[in-house]
Every structure is written in C-alpha cells, then in structure tokens.
Length: 244
Image (cartoon, rainbow, N blue to C red; front, side):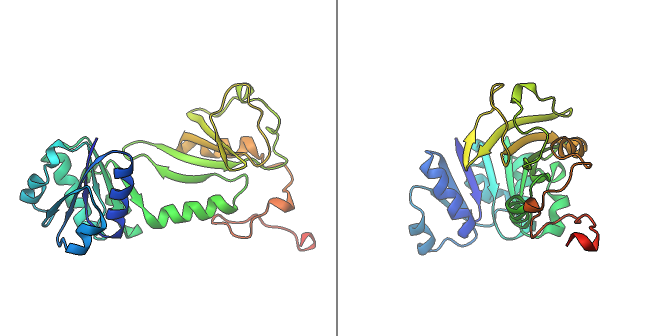
C-alpha cells in the first residue's frame, strides 16, 4: 500500500514512521523540507512544495496512492489537498486532520474527505471513556454515513451481566464488534458471558444509541454510587440533598 502524507510536521512524521514499520510505501510532502526533517524519517520519498498546487501533487504521484493523509496544522490546506486528491487524482481514500473543532462540519464528502480526525474530539472521547460507566462514548463517526464507533462500559448492576452474547438482542443497527476485559481485547462469540465493567465496542447508527444505553442501564435501575464518575460531559441526574 502506498500512502502520501501532506505535512511533515511532528504529526505527519510520526504517522510516516508508524506506517514504515508496517511495510508501507510513504511519500512526505511539505512546503519546506529541511535537512533535519529528512534525517528524522528515513526510508520515505520527499517532495517539497505547496500541496494545494496540482503540480506538487503530481510530483508526489498522488494518482498512484492508495491513501492520502492531509496532516498539516492548517485546516484550509488539508481541505484543499483532500479535494484535489479526490477529484483530480481519484485517490480511493483520504484522511484529513482537523485542528479547529469549529471547522469539523466542512470535513466531509463535499470537500473530498473520507475520514476526518479531530484531535480535540478524540481527546474528549478518551476522557469520557476513562470516566463513564453505563454511558455511550462516541469514538468516531464514519464520514458519509450515520454509523459511529461507540464504547459503553457495563455497570456492575446492569441486567445483562452474566448473559451470553448469543442470547442478547441488541437494538437495531447496533453490532457488537469487540469486548475489552481487564485491558485485553476479546473477539465476541455467542458463548462469551458478559461481565461487569466489560467495555463493549459497537458499530451503531446514531438514532439507536439511546436504546443501546437503556438496555445496559435502564432508567428505573438504581444508580450505583461506586460508578458515579467525578467528571462527565453529559448533564448529571439531579439528586435530593439527603442523598449526598
């Protein structure tokens, strides 16, 4: 697989190094290719120039790339490079970095972006995942579809604790794709019993996430004090003063 990375800053070079360890062919494109940058990543092809120009993308042979990653810190450059790669060079897959959350709405099909990666949103998801039990945490969304990758941790008093995966009837358009238990990934099978604090990974459509959350922790179930996180992004339920 051949990958062209736009932007040779710390993010672009880190991606390049990781891809090289996996045996990928990598080309790095940057406006200024210093000797320090060249020596920091060996085994890649370098192209110097503005990736918003067709001539530079042609020099990088974007047309033969399987994936273009727009990883600069400038959202405008990432959008233009993605669109040119998609429309002019027919690249099968584009991945673009989003630096400013207010620009996320633009990173979609209309600008030639297949997958948008927002650092602030990713960090927020990681914070939520660390402190949320029984609440849906959206990891990322698939561009051009209504499907999300989500995580939900099974509360200790959930009614599904002890049930076999094969006996579960998940809400429509919710597909269990993985279980993380004690830090170890598990490929779910019909005979696996669900345990408290299992982290369930789902591919799900947005409109069915509420039903999935209610299945694990029905609103009528009492809240376990041990599972109340100290930080939460959604509104906390009201409690009576005497419950403090």
